[in-house]
Amino acid sequence: MNYLINQSQEVAVATDYYWQDISTCPRGVKVQLLNPGGVAVYSNYSGPEKGVDIWLGWAPLPKRPSLQRRKDDLAAEAQSATDLGLLGHEEESDLGQYLLGVIHTNLAWILLAIAVFGINRHFW
Image 1 (cartoon, rainbow, N blue to C red):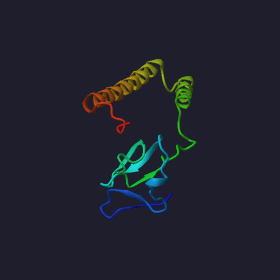
Image 2 (image 1 turned 120 degrees about the vertical axis):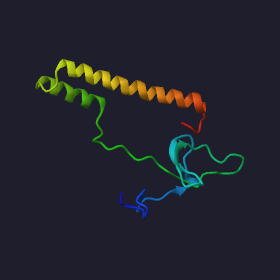
Image 3 (image 1 turned 135 degrees about the vertical axis):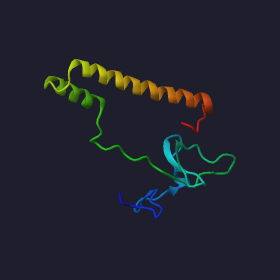
């Protein structure tokens, strides 16, 4: 994919990838939807509501690269580092506590968003 940075140096814009006509959007699956304000939203498209479609276009989600690091890869690297003596058991525990803290923090933000905004099908 090719892109250029806009004149205000705030946005990377694809030069060979365009928004698709909303009439071709698959229903009931997560896609990127373009609203009238020019903001992309990740949501499930359910079709026009009351005969009016508020979305200007859609795009499929980008595919994850095959080199995406998975949990197993990270665990294997941590084990290798431990085996080589680069990471002691104390550091393993600290790393585990850190990762657990990150998970709890993200979960807290999600629960806060649900409490503030409620459960809305367009939110997810």
